[in-house]
Every structure is written in structure tokens, then in C-alpha cells.
Image (cartoon, rainbow, N blue to C red):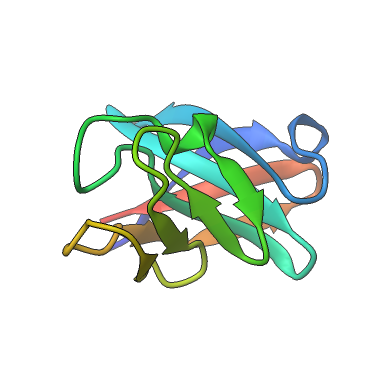
Length: 103
């Protein structure tokens, strides 16, 4: 069962932007891309680094520690040393509120 938690307001994210938020005790990277809002785990699967401090480009986020790239929509490793994908979370927007689903 999915429980929805308010993570941020839409005004907190510019286009192609990312912020780090804590949702239900979990570190989440919240993204705004041209086709919507997306959420992944905020910690790189290779070494401890906050992806919310990384660079967002072409639907991917670059880890600030070792320049690995992850697909924001799927969590898949696109390039770099990580072997494990990022966990992704469902997102919905109601009015100006962004919610992240936790199961």
C-alpha cells in the first residue's frame, strides 16, 4: 500500500532542478524535468554522496563524487562505476503540493 507524503511545493523546483528532502525518514532527491516531477533515493548506490548536490542534464543526474550518471525516471545506471540502480518513488502533484509515495 502506498502512503503519500508531502515533500515540497512546486515553487521549490525550477526546470531541470533537484532538491534533497527527507520523506518518512528516507533521503529523497526530488527532480523537476520538462515532463514532470520525479523522485529517487538521494544517496548514490556506489559510495555515499547526495545526488541532490549533483548536476542534472538530459534526464540524468550526475553523482558529485565520482561522475556516475543515473536515469532520473527509471533509476538505471547510465554510466560509471555503480552496479546497482537507484530506487525510484511515485510522485503526484495536487495544486502546488508535491507528494512522494512510500510503500
